[in-house]
Amino acid sequence: YIDSHCHLDLLKKHISVSEAVKAAKAQQVSHFINPATQQANWQTLLNLKKTYSNIQIALGLHPCFIKHHIPEHLDELEKIIEQHAIPIIGEIGLDKRFKETYKQQEIYFIAQLILAEKLKKPVIIHAVRAHADIIQTLKTQAFTQGGIIHAFYGSYEEAKQYINLDFALGIGGLITYPNNKKLRKVITQIPATSIVLETDSPDMQLYQQDGPYNQPANIPTIFSEICSLRTENPGELQQQFWHNTHRSLNLV
Image (cartoon, rainbow, N blue to C red; front, side, top):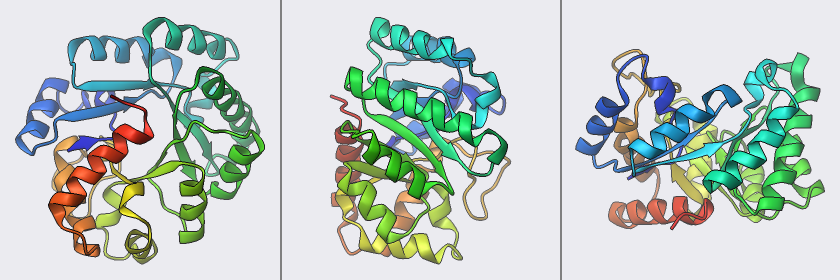
């Protein structure tokens, strides 16, 4: 398995990165995508990438950390992505839970989409209560590089629009909650070629999960829940989701 979205740099306040990687390996989770949240943690992620060959990173400016961003970080982002050959821009996006910063979020989101298009990089998008705005922005900006919609929790119609824009949908702990009937139904409707697995560790705990934090070792539980909702052979799905992650993020 590959965890397409985990914050190992933030998980370390609970357990070390090496412990998390070891626990994941015991559950056949062998590779990890670690997006950034703000400029202050870019160097930490660059160091993580140097230390672990099975951790790929994305660099970007997260909408929920808007107070930490300044315009100069956008110039720095372009330089550091080119200097270190970073393959993904993220985590970027929009979050309507933070209405007071929404206009600023839009400015940084559009700027990073323009940068990703310029550098031909896929993006990892954080989308909370903002699917219509994100879809419209992707269309307005004529964005063609695709990527992943992190922690997708929208309608089938929204899922279809993202898929048509060449995005995969990140499915994590939310799928394990029996009451999330809308998401569980969407999982039965979308093609397997559009699903990737994620945990968002240390956040987004699973249903009735033991312990105060999430971690990549929980990927098989998420996978099993998806399998219970679909008709394909689990072995086929496992291979498909691995391939989907690499295709959507342009990873070798």
